[in-house]
Length: 222
Length: 79
Image (cartoon, rainbow over all chains, first blue to last red; front, side):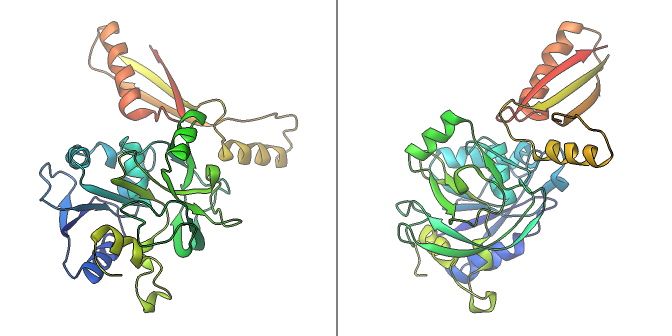
């Protein structure tokens, strides 16, 4: 499985993501710059976390309008797997590749800590390394992770099983509606999540609960 | 031509920042503030003198970038 990591000014988790993908797949991902309109032939495109464009206007809003996003949109339509973590998730919703919006945390505070997540759909290419209902640990670090969608959209994504990660009971750090932490698109090839699985993949991180996500989507052993 | 674009949260979308502002107003002694909904203002200068063209262009700007229509409403006024 070949992967690519998207680089945008202001992202700061790109190196963690490259390290995670290299560690788990054994192959370093290619990198794609924001103005690239031609994305190499890869199986997985990852938009990492950070603060692209300083979160100006709205988190992810400017990045979502960069040329590379049109190329990602075309790849996604062809079935290439796309994953956005944290700011990457915000960029995917701003680009319209995932439904809903990510708003300021209900507490108004930047939240940086470990939370427990429940895998609420293990029947996806991204989550197949987990079991349904499994509780996993992941770090979160964000100011705008408060997922919102209107009633109709919410009913649709819940009905389709598109909510794949939820903050476990009592762990919601940001006020997200229905405790939503991560969703996939209807076709199941685009995932966005606020927590950082790339920061829990080796013993030195204090745990390896994030490995199964990468291993699942990359089709390698965890 | 100058225009002012106003972007506000849609009704029903929670506004924790607005709530925090109500709290701060209360602590300054401004009693009786029922609620505050905060938003954004953009002052835009356009090259065109054609009002209809400016309106069309502003609408497109709002739809494509200035507002996130999942959570926000927009309006604009041309000077």
